[in-house]
Structure formats: C-alpha cells, structure tokens
Image 1: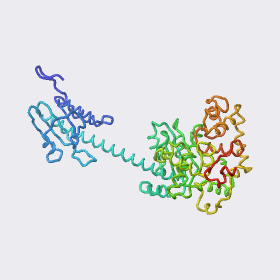
Image 2: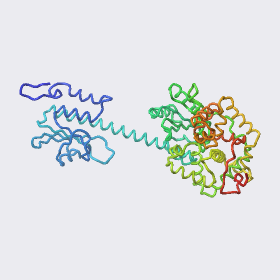
Image 3: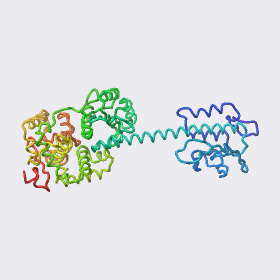
Image 4: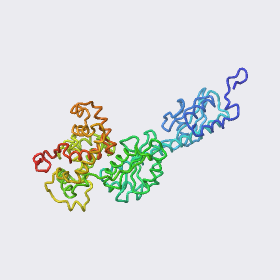
Length: 509
C-alpha cells in the first residue's frame, strides 16, 4: 500500500486491519514453520528479525548484534521483554520459552528497525513471540515423538535379534517392560509383510494397529520392503490377511508355529511362503507343511549323525558355540550381508564366524552339497529338545549315505525331481549341473556347452515346478540338493577333512 506523497511505502499489517489474522494463519496445518513466521514479522514491522537459541545460535532470520547483558536478562527471566535504543537502531527483545532438551536458556526473539516501535508494532512482536513459542514447542514434541518411535523400533529389532540367536531369556527380559506378556509363551509364528519400500513405515504402523499389541512388529533390517511380525496370537494371521488383501503390491508370508528358540527357522519359512504369496490371488500364503526330507530319516540315526558332525564345536564355551551355530544357520539360510543385518553385526563378523565353523568342521561352504549337509545337521541340532537329547546315542558310525538310503526318502526324491521331466527343456540336467557348479551359472554353462543365460532361465523355470526357491540360498534349495544326493545324481559331500575318525570323512567313503 502506498502512503501519502513524500512518505515511504507503508506495510498493510501496521496501517490496515488483519495482521492478527495473518499471524494466526501460520498456525494452520501445513503452514507451521518458524522460519516463515520470522520472515513475515520482518516484513510486518519493516525491520530485521533474529531468532536465536539460548546459546546464541541463529535459528531463523538475520543475525542482529545485541547487548549481551540485556539479552541475558531477558532469556534468564529477570525481565520479560526489553526495548532498547542503540544509536540509530530501535530494538525489541522477547524471550521465547519453548522446551529445550538441553539445560540451556530459552530462545530469544530480537527485532531491530530504524524507527521507534509504536503500540501496534510492539503488539505484533509480542504476539509473534507467542506463535513462535507454540511452533517451537510443536517441533520439539514432534522430534521427541520421532526419537521415541525410533527407540521403540530399535528395541523391537534387538528383541528379534536375541530370538534369532536363541537367547529367549534375554529377549523376554527386554520385552517385559514395554510389552508385558508378549513373549510369555513357548511358541509363536513369524510373518513377513512385503510392500513398496517407500511405504514401509506406514505399513509397519498398520501392522501394529491390526495386531492390537499382540505382536512384535519389526522393520526388517535386511530387506527394505519387509515388515517382520512375530506373534503367539492365533488371530494374527487372519488380521494380517485382511490388511494385505486390499492393497495392490502387498504380500504376506507366514511360518508354521515354532518354538521361540526356532525363530530363525520360522523366519526362513515365512520367506519361503512369501515367494508363494506373490502368485496367489489372495496375496498371502502360509508355509506348507510338505514332506521334508529329514522327516523321512530315522530320528535316532539323524540325531546321532548330526551330533557327530558338530562334535568339533563341543569343546567351545557354551555361549561361543551357540553364537557360532546360530550365525552359521542364518548365513546358510540367507546371504552373509542379510544375516549380518538381521543379527545386528557386521558382515565381516558373520563371515569370520562361518569361517571358524568351516575350519572346525573341515568343510567348504562354497560347495552346495556341503552347505546342504551342514544345514541339515545345524537344523537337526537346533530342533533337539533336552528330553530328546538325553536319548540320542553316542557315536554310532552313521554316515550321510545311510540317512539318504531309506526307501521313503528315495521315493520322495524321485517324485520331486521327476516333476522336471514334464517340461520340454532339460531342466533336470541343467539344475544338476548348476548345483554341481556351486550355483554358478557361468561354470555350469561351460560344463553344458550352453549360454549362462540359458542356465539361469532353466533354474528359474524349475522353481514353480518344484514349488521351491532355488536362486536364493536356503531350505528350499538344500532340500533339492538332498534329493539329488539321495538318488546318487551328485557326489557325496566331504566333511570333517581334519578328523578322519568321523563317519563322513574321506576315509569312510
């Protein structure tokens, strides 16, 4: 608005109505920003505005030179506000008593201009200080809420990581404070909800809501689009199904009920089920209780064999042994990088622990038949209850070949691999060569005299036929490897090279 002739431009906030309404507009949702308020104030009073914290750090506006003693009196509360004339400058100082997590003085709003402050200008400064205080308070409460949510999320992840390494006692202690009773159970199911990574925070919050405090909800540290849900409540599965049912691109995979110490196994089952869910109309799947090879083996012989395979680790302290076994189980089920993220350690730590187990077992984990064999031994040991452990016989000379020679297991293996014959391509031959090459498509292609892309396409084509994931390491792949071993289509793995007294050493065949 223009003034009379000879006068400079006049600001409408001072010489017209509505400045209070304009100030209050800054409290509307979407417009709450202290920087914008400070900029508005500078224009409203035609001056320079500075908002600084109790330490003198600029928060918004333009730095204004202030008398240190006067500023200290205002921020300390000895005076509520100050009006100062400093040469040709006129200043107003007002304390902004917003919360501050540090033991520091309140913030200070300082306004300097060339002309004295009339009543209206002084009122604008005073009321603006009140609005800035509200906005700073809201900002701090929002930041505190974010810190609390982050701490809660970190705590949930810590509990999951303890369960992953079978430390159920510590997991219960940590959970008891925030989620009383959640882990007062011997068993639970693990679910994985997959959505777009950019929408995961909202998806995790929805999982918390629908599970009604009866689940441990964790943002997966390994997969950006995954939310892990561990719950003992039977109703959780249906509630999560209803959540993903109406969301395009969202899928649910669930495990069967497992002992809490078997959380890592349940997690692997949920990952496997998630792969199936992507092709289901309802976008959800629970791990199928299909026939697993270990269930077709003689239990006593299986446990005696696994105890013999893992006996080199028995000399280690209990905590070290448990740590190595849990890490290796995850490292065989997933990549070292993913296992490291799930456990909350570095990938070098995972690899170092697995290298130590390799050395103790005399094994080579780059060989898929060795990985499948070690995986069988580790999971058999993990499922061993104290009662069952008391019945396991001592060293009995049981070999892997003895376990795989049973008619039931061989019939299962034949039925599984014969499915591949129905395809016009030689999926079975390609898959066998790919496994023998350690899962390396280039090496398998050289052995077969085909292109590496052909190998990858054949392996990918075998997945829906076998209803198992093959291109990612884990239980599905190892079961297929055991099927090949049972039918003699792959050479038996060599374990325990350093201990020829063990049944599966080279000396024993």
